[in-house]
Length: 252
Image (tube, rainbow, N blue to C red):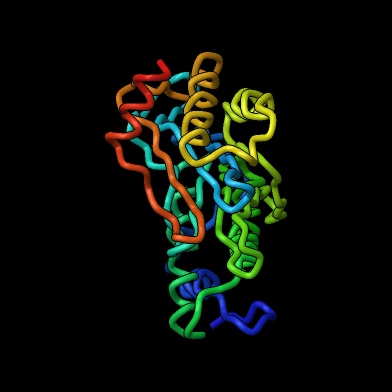
């Protein structure tokens, strides 16, 4: 396996070295390639910072065209963390799948799960490995939410295409509708004091606001319902669709 200079070896680096990952682009081409773009991911820390809720719409677009109305953009990385992806959908989904595989791989070798800091580092390495591809056009960025058992807090990190990681405070958002969504969330005072139910409403309201100004973000009652994920001391889990439908109807 390829050694990345730390006590753990990287599964994704090994797969890349063995030619089991899709090859990166090389050179510059004038050919136009249409790819699906995934948007919009929102996160809100609540319950005193001990929990975080992630929300995502289901639309994928290519330019001005809607290419998919049931795109999954939120994934459970392990029992206590979740990842959301925005940008080039295929690349983002690869990030999510490989990241989950790496966490499982490391846990089997070490006999325990990585710390939250360790997960942030692994995801940074994975994103940085695709920098050459990002510089040529296709790019995706993840958002990582996890429960830090050492601190007893839910933590959220965003990333740039170079693998840089940035810890967020109360709210975070990525994707084409992120600025609108985050403005809605930031207008809410004392958001850390919200409970889980209020956080669900706030994230769905922010998605609804983004959808009104951003054509790449679908509304609450579109072809597919938004997706909500909660992360806290009890683990990472998807919210029930029936409950999301109930809230969507209430807020629409």
